[in-house]
Image (cartoon, rainbow, N blue to C red):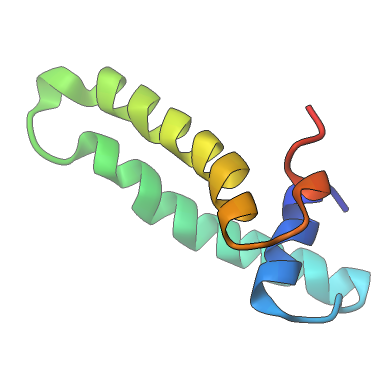
Length: 81
């Protein structure tokens, strides 16, 4: 399990389920959230799809680094690399 998975579990205040359940839950959650998140790049003017996608990716990465500390979560899970 990677650091971002552990960060999410800590943020939700949940215990870690067995590996089969964790895989199914993670896959479903990733598919749903990524569909909504990355579809934002295609919303609006089609001339700006690539810059919007880059900004969304950068914002997501920075959010994982900065917000975890602001929320009082363990930075060891997101600040490894």
